[in-house]
Image (cartoon, rainbow, N blue to C red; front, side):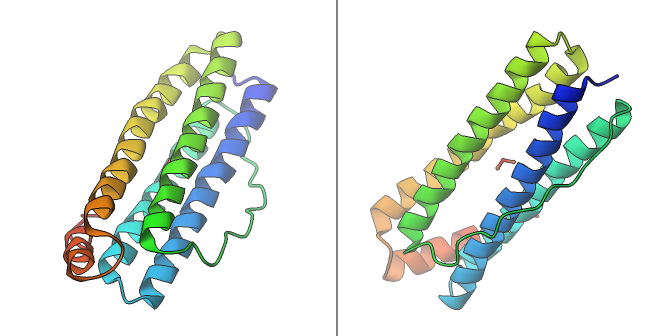
Length: 163
Ligand code: FEO
C-alpha cells in the first residue's frame, strides 16, 4: 500500500508530466505558426511521450491501491522566442523535471518503498535521454543558427521522428 505522502507526491508528478505535455504542445503550436513543420512534429511527439509518462504514474498509483487525483494544469507560455531559445527552454525544463524525479526517488527511499523506487528508476533513465535529446538539438542549432537553409534541413530531420 502506498503511503499518503508518496501518493500525493506521485499525483503532483502526474500533473508535472501533463504540464510538460502542455508546454511542448504550446511550443509545437508556435513552430506551426512559423511554418517549421518538422520542429512542430518533434515537439508533438514529445508532448505525447509526456502524456505516456503521466499515464505510467497513473497506472502505478492504481496498482498500489492508491487514489489518483488530477490537479489543475497551469497555462503554458504562448511565445518562446526563436527555436534556439525554445530548445534552451526545453533543456531547462527537462533539468527541472530531473530534479523533481530525484526528489521523488529520495522520498521513496526514506519511506522504504521499494516498488516506487523501481518505478522511478525508469524515470531516472528516461531523464538521461530527455536531457540528451534536447542538448543534441541545441548542439545542431548552434551550428545552423535559427534561420536559413541549415534550419530548413534540421526541420526536415526532426520531422522524421517516429511516434
Ligand atoms: Fe516526462 Fe520530459 O519528462
